Amino acid sequence: MKKLMIIAAMMVATVSANAQFEPGTFSIQPKVGVTASWLSNMPDISGTSEITGKKVKLDKAPAVGIVIGAEAEYQLSNMFSLAAGLNYSMQGSGWEDFTEKSGDYKFELKDMKIQLGYVTIPVVANIYLFKGFAVKGGVQFAFLTNAKEKYSLKVNYDDYILNKDFDEDIKDGCEKFDLSIPVGVSYQVPTIPIVIDCRYNIGLSKVNKGDGDKMKNNVIQLTVGYKFAL
Image (cartoon, rainbow, N blue to C red; front, side, top):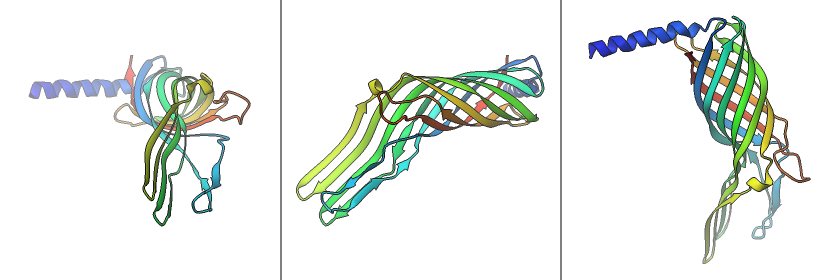
């Protein structure tokens, strides 16, 4: 057991020693994190309740998902590097839950969202302002893998009860390619090569097909990665 602990300590020390990433070195960084996203120009959902006669409007809310992948980086100098990644990212947009009650009548609309999945290829330039801290910007190419519209509906009115989960594939109504501009910052922990990365992806491409409003992806992405020298 002691020998295994010594070997493990030596491996960690070796990785930490290589975590300085001198100019001319390559590294690869597996990463995982969360996304908070919304679609610009989403149509409002509003109307008048047939039961209570009240005006109803559903407020928009970000859709929360995951991002997972890896990024390769080449250190050009102490101050500059170039990186390219390959990720799977969950994106989309959502609305806040809505509940309406009146006597024996109850209406619930929950988890309403447009859920989009993309394989993304970000290419970014990093500028290290000081050791471990970088600002970044570049371009991201994305390819749609899945698109769904979802919500959960519950209605209870006298003897009538409805409980339905709605799940519709809308991929045919979405563009298959998406282009965005990622900007952000990252910080590498001094003692170990753990990198915390925060980005905002500004969508340039129209998500929906047709002549309707030009909906575009907007994504805040927070990831944690571990850099290995190659």
